[in-house]
Image 1 (cartoon, rainbow, N blue to C red):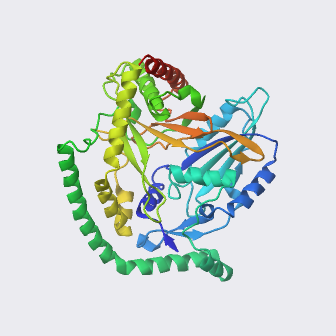
Image 2 (tube, rainbow, N blue to C red):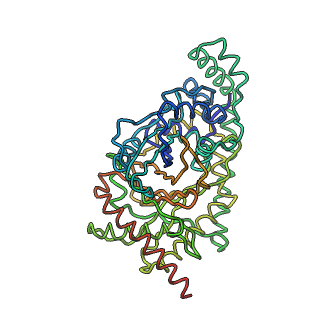
Amino acid sequence: MKSLAARDATMYWLSARTRNDLFLLYCFADTGREAGELRAAVANRVVDIPDLLIRVLDTPANIAYPVWVTCEFTNEQFVDHHHVEATWANVTAAVGDLLGTGLNANDRPWRLHVFRNIRDVPGFATGESALVAVLQLSHALADGRRAAAIARALFCGSEFPASTISNRSGRLVDRFLPRNLRDAVTSALAATVALPGIPIGMARTVVRGLAAARAQRGLAELTAAGELPPPAPDTEPTALNGTGAPPAGHIVRMLVCDKNRLRVSDHSITVVALTAISFALETYLSGRGAAVADLRAQVPMAMVIAAGGRNGYRDLSVDLAVAAPLPRARADRIAADLAARRTRAAHPLQAAQDSVTAVLPAPLLHHDVTHAAIDILPERVSGHTVVSSVDRGPADLRFGGGTARFTAGFPALGTVMHLTHGIHGLGDTVTVSIHADPAVLPDIDHYADLLESALDEVARALRESGAAG
């Protein structure tokens, strides 16, 4: 019996209020395998992946953090979307619909959606068909890095780190007790163990809270002395932030690129993509009559995960430098601000607040998560879009006998973020994805065309200015 870490529990409880599942799309060459054969291959593989054989169990009145318990693969976790007409456009629309769904991690925290014999897929020759697999994961189960590792274990057969959940006692109980009784015994035991520790947790929270206050003073002193970059400023929302209402729907587009198309000598692909997104957003908003004085992006940064945790990242607010009109100057400013945000976020004093949350008694954290005002657009925001960048490794993945061609991801929408971008690499390809609320971005194809052009123009300008320099 292993409790969810505080951050993972936050993701789990938050999923009841907003859609925050992860969706990892992988595109393979289709070798014609039938759905039953693919399902059997998945069932055989997951027995060696501990993260795919667990689920969440709540505790009475949330006295304790939810716990991870073992489970088995069920056929319902493999969904064959055979009813979708086999074209890339229809698969793209179906993926948008999937993004509006959420898993019940109490039952199973993952599901694999499969689309077979797909035509007109980017990067595929005429007449060549594709197999598209979309791995849906509860955010309580994994962050972006761990999700990519899970997918790699599923599609590559690579080793996955041993689970922190012990199966031995669970198997003995499974043999003699039905699931509902087993769950009742396990959750009651977790609550019984946690209840005496609540006063201790409160005391630890106070102690760590005082330490966090000292850490904040230390950060302020380092900032004033010029030894640490200042915190990122908040900014006014734009039309991209919506009105505080949940997304009206979910639509996606994917721009599949050869990695060399976005490579430049002195900036990362992430910076190239951020610069292109900056120009595309500026052009798009200006075309709608909006004055664009400032644009910022939330960029998740991977962090070291505490023992037993599954989510380790910090959101950085990065200036998209719209005041710099030329690609070279804009890219340089974006790279510099991204580096400054990373430097500040990685400072050891920043971990003090996380340490407070880590010991907060479960009833208090549950109350905070379930009562937080997430449906109000604040006067100031930290960003106008999200840009998540993950390299998912070499293209040595296989499914149904077919090799992987590209991957994509779609950061979740919320009541403040109604447009997000994914930058996901696999082998020699990079996919720049757009995930939008149609109420905020009704003409997504126009924006996708702007971004497609901006990617080429920025990369070309950076290569030319780099060669000239």
